[in-house]
Length: 190
Image 1 (tube, rainbow, N blue to C red):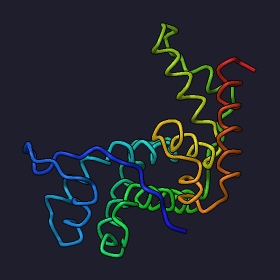
Image 2: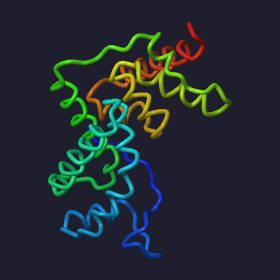
Image 3: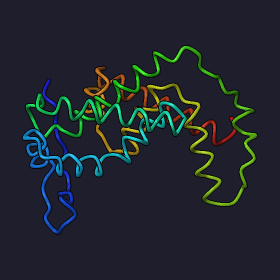
Image 4: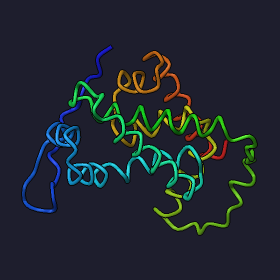
């Protein structure tokens, strides 16, 4: 299956006015250009860190996973045959790295709904709603968290998510539906 690529905005390169497409940066990375690698790192670190955090719920562990993800990206970038599929490719690496980490984790602490609701957040406007959403996302099963993150936050299509997670498009849609329902019920207090 060939990954479909989204059109992406050019990114700043070398901290100057020069802008390059992601495909150009990937090709530069494949040729060993460390400045292009740095540009790719800076362009994707926030969204990949957010994805890793959704898996772990631990900022420090997410940062460790982020480093593992980028090591894998840059060690394997020469194997990428279609630079236009770069974004889907790195998210597949991130997903697999996070899943492998989750499998290695022997004990997981289960959090009850009461513990999540009794976190002591202030109930003021937008901040409270954001905190409720974050808490609702934390209680989702891993695959639902990832699908929610990839679709509703990162903007991937169901087909792209299915390719990243190596599942069917129907499974991706189902996981997103279930995630949204659980979030909605949590926020409503159901």
